[in-house]
Image 1 (tube, rainbow, N blue to C red):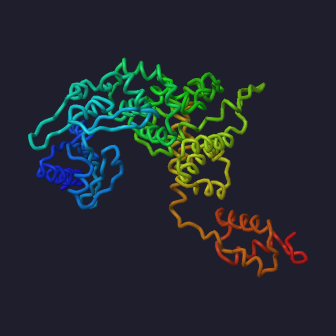
Image 2 (image 1 turned 90 degrees about the vertical axis):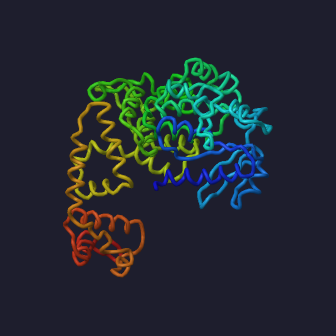
Image 3 (image 1 turned 180 degrees about the vertical axis):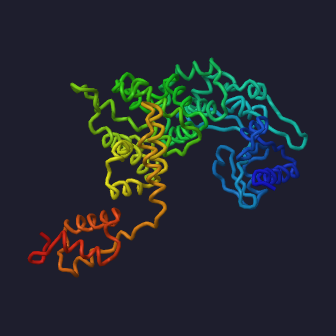
Length: 445
């Protein structure tokens, strides 16, 4: 039995327990949508007539994650399932969460949901799909449409504007034109949504099968300039035509993202931000257009953006490294072996390679540096990694050197020699130190 089938079986046990006690209980939302699309659901949500208190009493392992909104997590054999009481909602004063909830019937529960494709239920006992909102027809038409008046739905919960784009690219559907027009009209409201919520939706858009389409939709909707104003200023920024025949910085960035599909978020954000500093560093020099220092400034700007969006620190570090180091590939042919090996030792160098490849394909199309690095990586992988620390700081002190800034320079030079293959043993490393850093009065000259 597969893990997915297993999960459904566990969810059906919860349905069965609720039915035994006389409650209505149905699968709801995305799992029903995915079943109709012949896609294995990742999760199974349950909607029921049972109140939160009744759910808490019925199941031994529960977590009241949103009891005030009628939502309880039921843990079945270690797997959590969201069990929500049929409800209506109102008073969305913050544009995100309702101020009051009233328990209701399934028809009313369907009407409070966001999009028709998410407003479906499955009655496992009767073997029927329950559809009060036309969701089944919209799945057949591949259409993202709000339940009821789109204006009311987006004023209730502003995040739904981003969710519409996310479902478009995740499901490969199209947003209903009247629904999209309302998003365009109310794009400013996204500024009232927390950065964490925006980040979560942005991540899902960028790691979807169609991230470039998602960015174009965000731009057309007016959402991109609100959540990432740094991208808006890329438009119209010229680039040297011999390297970038494709057009301005914004066009190039979108073409690069066209090469992504279901990519890791670090690569996707690195692609989105790799040229973020070009507008700020643009200089029209006598010979050609230049962007002096856009790699370092881009990493700094990316860090500010990613912190604003509340990305985790480890992801921030990797994304900023992708932005900062991408320009170094053009110098790979001239790098010393030691420099090249250090370059290859960057964390997740596979992502660095892929970003460079996509960058080239979205511009001049020359993959010489990519192929060179690929060849050298394979070549270096044939031998065991060299023991870099043949000599340590403690060894240097025993040799009579005084601790100080020179220590790191001496050790770095010795490690470079190891990487170059000119030093292979500890004795050779000690001889290297003595030769290149002779002592004079207890200090290296």
